[in-house]
Image 1: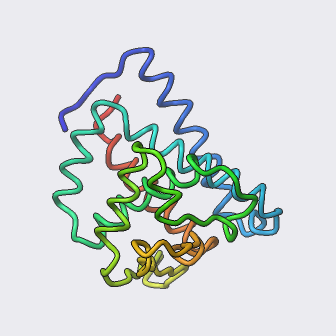
Image 2: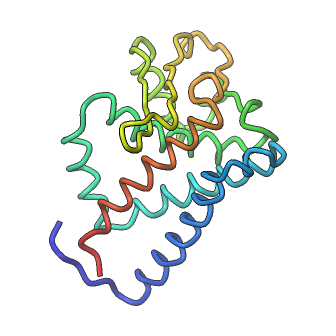
Length: 190
C-alpha cells in the first residue's frame, strides 16, 4: 500500500476508533480485567471486536486485507475470518450475559439471509483441524489457545463460543492478533 494522507473525516474516525481499541486492549491485557463480572467482560469484548471490524472497513484497508489474506497460511486466514465471524455472532445475537453463555446453531444463523457469511464459514470449516495460537515474548509462551472448529454445526447442534475460543487466553490472543493487523495496515497512513 502506498503512503496515504487521510482526510479530516477519515482521520477523526480512525483516531477515535484506535484510541478506544487501545484503551480496551490495555484493560483486557491487565490481569484485573478478568476479575470483573462476566457481563462487563462480554460488553468490552463486543466493543473491541466491533471497533476492529469497523476499522478494517476503511476503504484503503480493504485492499491491504485482501493482500494479507492471500499471503497467509490456511491457519492464519482462518483466524482472520474467525475474528469477523465472532464479531457477527456477538453483534447479531446480543441475548447473552457472558462469553460462556453465547451459543448459536444452524437454524439461528440461517433465519436471516444476511447471516450467510457465518453459515458459510462454519459449514466450510466443519471438518477442519483445530488451530493452536500462542503469544510469545522473549521465546517464552505467555498465552496459548486452541481454536476448535465445531464438528456438528450442519447437524443443528448448539455451538458454544467458549468451546471454539476460550474467554481469557482466546480473547487476549485475538486482541494481540487484531492489534498486529491494525498496526501493519496503518504503517503507511499519515
